[in-house]
Image (cartoon, rainbow, N blue to C red; front, side, top):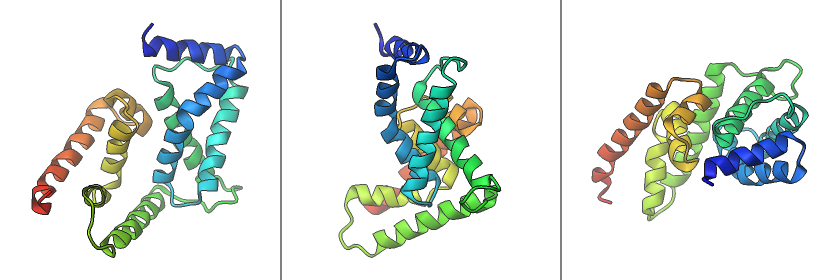
Length: 189
């Protein structure tokens, strides 16, 4: 039995109310969801965990009516992104409301702070230099790279999470990799 079939079987067991399958889905995906959520927002980790738990509460409540996704991880990442955006945009939310431009500004500020911290450290490691270069990419390219290489999603899954078509997802990743390759020789890595 291949991993996709195992994943489908676990999801189907969860849909039938199997708490062990639900717990397994949570354990296998909470780390990726946290990393992704923190990359989308400069708000606290509590906000991200609240949104993650809201996603899991909602899928448990709707388990009888939700479909079996092609990729559970991509499904959960997209659900988290939607939940975070909805929470940030809801008027009754205790968090400030943001429009799309504000969301990008917060992302840029977080990246700027990280870059400043890196610039104040002597003796960068290769990993720090690569991370610094990545932080200088446009936010959408960073998001696409993270989903493709950190979360190990296929291009169609990246496209699904980012609400774009497959070709656009692939273009974002290719352009980001090209920019990184052009910058790496200058760093004499």
